[in-house]
Each structure stands twice: as C-alpha cells, then as structure tokens.
Image (tube, rainbow, N blue to C red; front, side, top):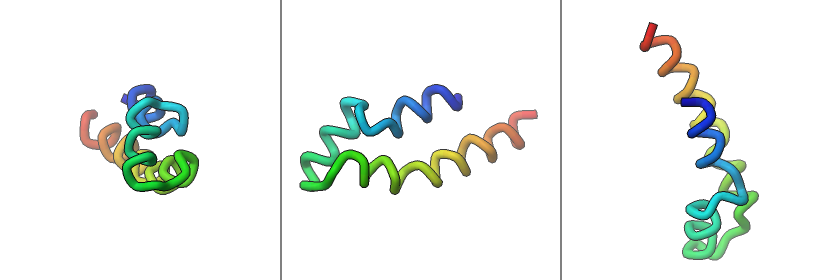
Length: 50
C-alpha cells in the first residue's frame, strides 16, 4: 500500500503531471500538498488492517 501511495504522490507520476497541468501548477507543489494526507492514510490503514 505504501509503495502505491508513494508512486501516486510522486511529482514525476503521469497523473500528477496531468493534474498539475490542468490546474496550471507545478507538479512538485501538487506532490507537496498530497504528501501529508498520503502518509496519514497509510498509517491509518496499517493500524486498522491489523
């Protein structure tokens, strides 16, 4: 799960570049905004999937 979340939040991932282009934003800014929620989601999933 963590690997999938990390690849999705990567600034060089295709979907991140697409979304950043649509929003006229820098892909690194988009990745920075999604990093903390991704970490929280992975931690919560790890806790609840025990």
